[in-house]
Picture 1 (cartoon, helix red, strand yellow):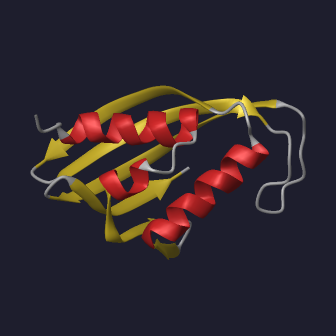
Picture 2 (cartoon, one colour):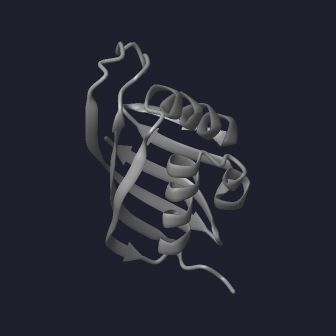
Amino acid sequence: MAQSKEERIKLANIELFDQGDLGVVNEIFATDYIVHAGGKDYKGHDFIRRFIIQLRSAIPDIRVLKVEFLLKAGDTVAWQRTLSGTHKANMMGIPATGQKVEWRDMVISHFEGEKITEEWAVS
């Protein structure tokens, strides 16, 4: 049974952030995946895996609190997620604070078939 785009986005969030299951990358994301974030472009499965490992190392108790869908138009879904956890290690030059953090990401995901090919993200 095919999953909806929203179900695939939720699956990716739970498996990657909450569970740290990098095996889902091949299932959800196209091999030529690209994300536009912070004025830069990041490409491929290796980027996704490195990002998740880095984030889960810095915030080992990270959890997705909420995934909200804002708009769906054809093969594109606009959505936001709220994440939280304790900042326990250096992350992108930011020293560990030991503090509980909570933040929201806004994401637009474009699908080709059942796989996410391109995303635009603001955190």
